Image (cartoon, rainbow, N blue to C red; front, side, top):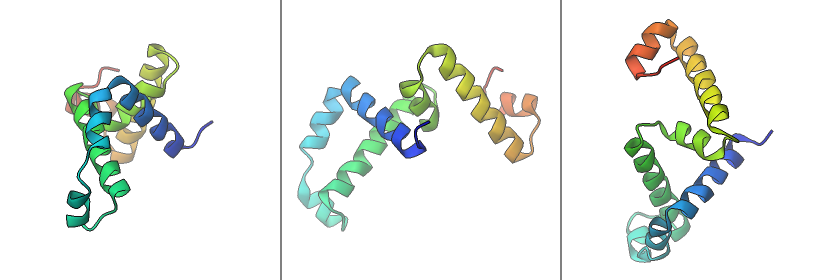
Length: 109
């Protein structure tokens, strides 16, 4: 099994393959903007990539971690199974009943 960071990086790579416009924007960032924020160009680029990824997740009505799962799952069925498993874990950690959690987050399970 891959490490969470590896999975997220794979999702980012697949996201960029599907969104060449974002890649173009990232490749043409102004180094002075990074410098103004006290960051390297690589750090600034990574921040913009994560912002674009999160915006896409929001556009799709997903959490960013759900988009990571969606982009890396072997099938739609695997995605749904993994997604529900994580939501159930979050509900348990929050001390919420599954029904209450589903209603609050719009999860059908």
